[in-house]
Length: 312
Image (cartoon, rainbow, N blue to C red; front, side):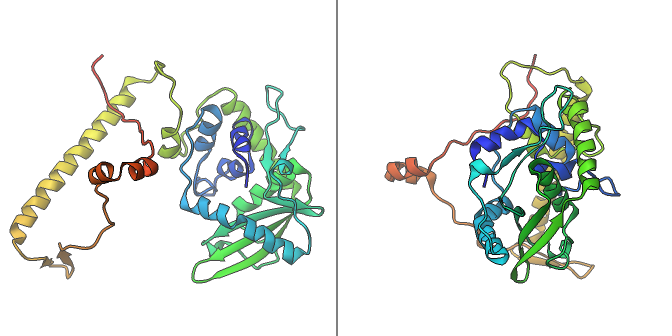
């Protein structure tokens, strides 16, 4: 698991977790199912607020040490996992500013290669254990790691889980053709978009959550066509109008329903409206009044930005 300092250093380079997002499949979709090249660009050009760890990422971190231990047993070796030993920078390939472009943080390594830990429920993407039949995005990731570290092979320990859990090992050898593609695409992306702070072509937009996390500079106003703001304002109003119409239609439906809990539809389906148990709700006012110490201990700051148009 990487340290917070290593996490901050990621802005300066293209890391292994960035690479697959720079490549697309035959349909033009990012090879990374969780981010696009535009998301990568934003993470390098802007300072981002801390990311709320997803359940998948949290699960991966939780099982990483167990998978490294599994790999050590399978390979019969001692695996290096000290954070200060896991960072590598490729000093050979630099950008137009003369600074290195590629860097990585490994999960572990030993004399004969890299060790990468993965957890996934997408079992159909993985081929026969012991082979190099791994998802292309994973192959790109470990090839990038080999580019930065100089190792010739990567051992991938995977926890596969869907209807059951299995631990498997895969072996990927260094592939110069893939590495050259990473160098070419990464260098082009870095020079053309990151160093110039130019937004990549909108072939695939970034995820809104990435751009919400950009740390805003007080009193700074961007040069953006007013039409873009008007377009957002119009679509927001269309959504609000649609929500209002939905509520009105629902109110009419409930009125006609009377005290019945359902309706048989002409197409054979059922419309039902009855109680179901939801998550328990805490009475915050009572908690604060009667148990102030507990309230203080479990309360955390919760701030967020709101997009609105004000008079000039």
